[in-house]
Amino acid sequence: MLTLSILMPCYKGEDFIENSIEIVEKEVSLFEKNFELIVIIDGFVDNAYKKAKALEKEYKNLKVIGYEKNKGKGHAIKYGLKYCQGEYVAFLDSDLDYHPKALKWFLKIAKEKEADLVIGNRKDKNSIYKYPLMRKMASLGFNIYVNFLFPELKSHDTQAGIKLIKRKKALESFNYFENQQGIYGFIFDIYLLVLARKLNLKIIQAPCIFEMKSSTIGKGKKFFKTAYKMGKEVWKFKQNFYKGFLNEK
Image 1 (cartoon, rainbow, N blue to C red):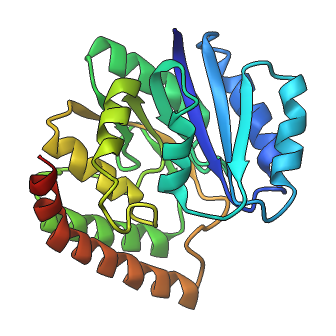
Image 2 (spheres, rainbow, N blue to C red; image 1 turned 90 degrees about the vertical axis):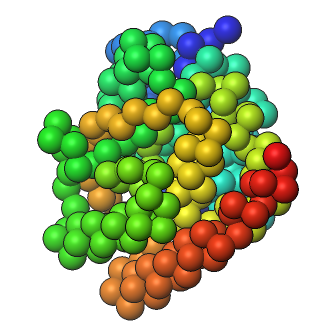
């Protein structure tokens, strides 16, 4: 069995996907030789699939998969899980706002502390966190809001896009997502954290390296509109999750 599978969802990534693949391959190979990189093209809307697929000849551990319609990060990760062979699975944003170098720390923590799930914490004193002040404040406020609604989380960073989870636990967790509306949207990370707590997974927060290169939730008015929508989705999730969880159990 492979040690590590890296799932990298990609949407509208034709301008950066080749560079991202090359960086991940280079950085991860420095600390782990036994890994695979699975790129999931979340909608054939540009040339990202063609460009990424061409690199399979160069990197034998690279798998590029995808589908025609954009369905969101959660769906992409679930789709990619079917192709994973690693004992541990890492989630990494394809624009590399989160640097793959941090996966070395995540993997070490998972093994030494027997963690089921290791999540990035941009607020850790050892993290490198480059983010506009306005976005930092918005992120802090949103984190407080989420922890208020879900006090069991006790998470300093509910939205960090870099995570590492035992593959068996990932498959188990996604089985619970089938009847949860909204799981494939912007609040996928919150769904996963709340469910992980409910399933009593051992969760450890870890430092990461974050530098915003793009904004998947937009800028200016679009950012505030998306933030408002995310807030509503979290509130709706709060109302429906426990009922759905108990019914499944």
